[in-house]
Image (cartoon, rainbow over all chains, first blue to last red):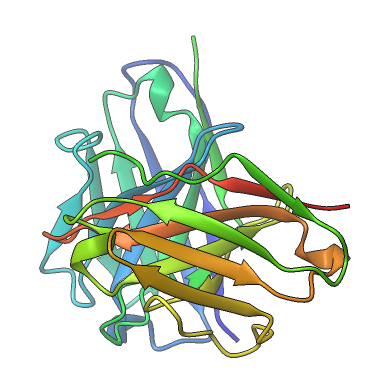
Length: 120
Length: 110
């Protein structure tokens, strides 16, 4: 059974940095591309970033490009999201999701999410 | 990249069918057969219900079906049940390794 567990969220001041983690189990983590998707309070879903199965390729939404970095450690079965220069509009629940890497480009499994609140 | 357009809400009685539309452009919905749909209950993580326009992940009831025509995709829930109440989001691959979601539709079972 696939399990994705995010951590690292919390309250952070504008302009500061934060790193989120997502621990994966129940899958061969190194086989799959992974995404981060976020949801602002009371709002819809927004795709944030994608990393390839081996970490060699990264892609970002325009809204976060240059401020957010996705990475992974396949030896630890862990996905990361490094966020810097945080803004109020980055306040959201951040979900780690698995791309089944079967060519259908969707989000097959989701973690429970971790809440990031950017506030002074 | 603009969000896909979904109705804010739809409703139906138990046993009825409801359809949620998701309108994009030729750069996303119309350009790829990579439309997916997600169900989200309050306070919970989203769950994949449809992928590849019309395919159901294992364990999703066949009451859920998807289709696409041009730049508009649709999710139909047949034989509506109380547990189907929640928010539904469509999503499309938008090229260059980017994805775009719809604004979400609240499904109410009367």
